Length: 202
Ligand code: Z5A
Image 1 (cartoon, helix red, strand yellow):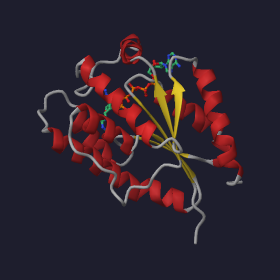
Image 2 (tube, rainbow, N blue to C red; image 1 turned 180 degrees about the vertical axis):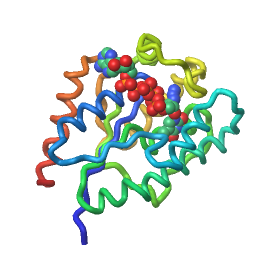
Image 3 (tube, helix red, strand yellow; image 1 turned 90 degrees about the vertical axis):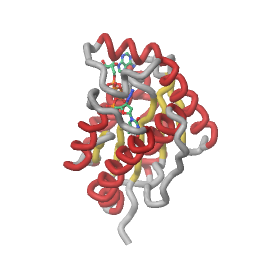
Image 4 (tube, helix red, strand yellow; image 1 turned 90 degrees about the horizontal axis):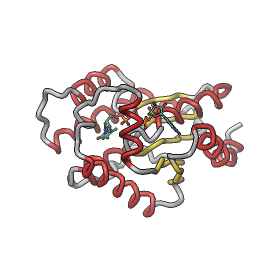
């Protein structure tokens, strides 16, 4: 049977620095040819679902929203993540199912579970910090607000609380990182946590 690769995910509220850290990690691991994916998206179907989900002009029922995120994820697992892990590759995901548990579960109050066919990450880096910091970074970067980002500060706080509960419930998988630290400091912490996991993968 093919050796299983390593599945690494980044989670956190908006502007917490997930994309920055996923990219820095991808560069650090470049020799291993890692697969770097983002959610929602990463496949043709997923990118189309992403456009639907982030489009401001649509009223989407909260549970329908959850299934759209999960449909995008299932396609990404089938096309990209599962084959890469089965062939022993490192997969780095900028958001995964914990985002649904935090946003649709915690933020919107929809009952959520982890589907048995979705792989569990080996390690999940949770970037934590005041939600205001992330939102203001986003504004400073001059990005326009999509449908999700237009939500109230209370919504983003509920999401942060849900992430906190998820990390408390599964301390062996989650690594909490201070998102207010510098990009380089956070990246070095990520490396330190991964070194023992990567040793067995040479
Ligand atoms: N969503 C959901 O509801 N359910 C789901 O299942 C999934 C997602 C998967 C779109 O996601 C929305 O979908 C998102 C959650 C929801 N909505 N919200 N709100 P997205 O991934 O496209 O959007 P995002 O997660 O909010 O990404 P983002 O705004 O791009 O944030 P980020 O990836 O965490 O941060 P970043 O792009 O790396 O950094 C943001 C800025 O801060 C940028 O200018 C950086 O240069 C800067 N930055 C990064 N790190 C630092 C540090 N350490 N110090 C200072 N400045 C920094």
